[in-house]
Image (cartoon, rainbow, N blue to C red):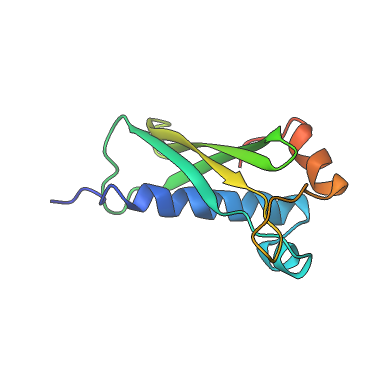
Amino acid sequence: MGIVYYANYLVWFEVGRTDLLRESGWTYRDMEQDGFSLPVIESHCEYREPACYDDELEIRTTGSLESPVRVRFNYRVVRVGDGALLASGHTVHAALDRQRKPRRLPERVRAILQSERSPR
């Protein structure tokens, strides 16, 4: 059909989230070595216009703390060619330790998420 499969947007959200954390100085590898995981406990996506194959897309991602053990990431999928907003959404994540128990994020990570982040 030439239209991108809807579930790909959630994959793009993950890419945006991974890039935001990496650029902030805390990679998923670092997170796991520090004894944390951030499983998705909620996801939402609103589709506005279809992405087509070969569209160049930008995933604009911001993050914020919802509580000491919950993180929310917001996403905007934009077509680079014309700036059209194709989709927007969010994911909420629980911060867990190695035993899968809720755990407060390290202060340096909370500081990153509490500060106003520029879109990615």
